Length: 289
Image (cartoon, rainbow, N blue to C red; front, side, top):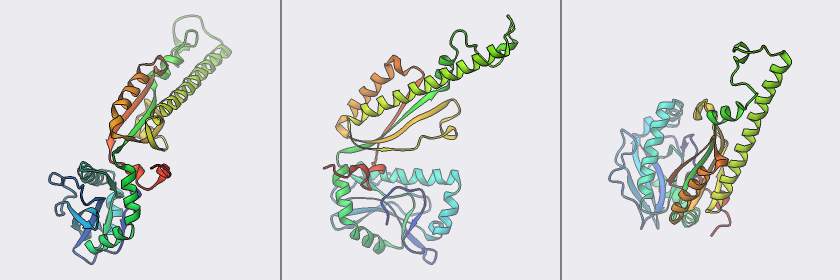
């Protein structure tokens, strides 16, 4: 059983020959489980439940084996709508468990052939789970993203004397020469590049400010326009592990940055607190108490 979040299925044994399989959402301490009474889990399965393994507790659900075999999962998770449904169901149960205390989320679609396989996998990794639970106790994950907006780019590009659009040569007024037109295009391109550099500098300021509050960070590749939309360019996409009692400081810090004149045309998106999906495999937590 793998504890690193990953969208591909993790199957410990073929499950197609059995009627039921055990889906594993998370691992927590047996004395601090969250309430699963409102957690629905995956449709067609039994209610989410707790499976005690010594001082640890696996959050599991009985699911139809045929629908959660490796082949079936590969087909289902290849469909965007089905992937979203599975991810939402998984996250809902993890969130319910995490409400009771530190919780190590399992990757999406972690399947075992029965409870005994779960007990064996958790038992074999008990030390790693205990260490991860100690590291994340009292802390939560926050996602911070910085975007350069199209409106901000346009405002900075449309400086006096550079023109305001691609149709400027057809506007009323003196006809410009080809050289002047190219100079204006170069001027606008230069201003756009300057604004992007400013956005990168702003992202560095955001990262530095939030890092002062965090105990660990995980930088990620920025999303493309298929996720952000064509009017926004993502400059930064980072996850931070922050003590729960410092969430107010995070809110105040982001508020001050957003109000700064340097952040004109730049958006800062913050989401959380989340269960620490990004920080339960060691990563940058190594060396932290």
